[in-house]
Length: 299
Image (cartoon, rainbow, N blue to C red):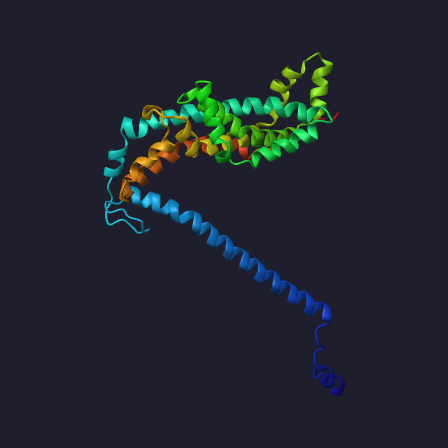
């Protein structure tokens, strides 16, 4: 009985240094995680507030710069902007410009990335470094000589000239992305096709490109979005009002004396963003997929 009482009254031992250190480390990690979550919430709010303003102001009869719940709901702003001169013709011009330039960019990037990914050359490294440097070159730095060149070759104020420049400006980044995605396709699949007598062009079209669907989707979306929101290039190279894309015609909602039609501007922004959202929705399945080539080279 005495021994039992003494044993029950024995004090607990202090936690070891390792236990204290692990607890301290867990607390620090929790604090760092909380700080990172708060920073991400602030960044998300900074991106979300303009989108919320666009949606709310497009149906607000008294739209302004403040983000507020509309006192009523109206579609008069959409009725005002959904006209051929304001929306439909500029959107068609944007689809022609960005769609044509995106298709040209993807084709040229695939043809340029294929030899860089599949064949060894001492010029491949310097070429990729040049491409990487070209991605950092701002378009504003080359617009003056480009404008003079387009005047000399009669490409100014033409849709085909603007498409060519759009494709040329996006091609360096597209080549870099395409080459990295193409490296993920096993070369053994092409070697098997070469053994059967298929040329390189046929193996590229029938084997490599179908297997790198997610890569093609990324390059397509990236190129299209970058061109879709570009204001400066078409503003400089196109002069006729009937050829202006939607990225330039949005400037019509800003008055000369600081007066802005905020409701119509928000409604036009909603319509202007729709093609990009639809493009992402259409190819979202390819963006989330993988190459699924793990078992393709076995056996």
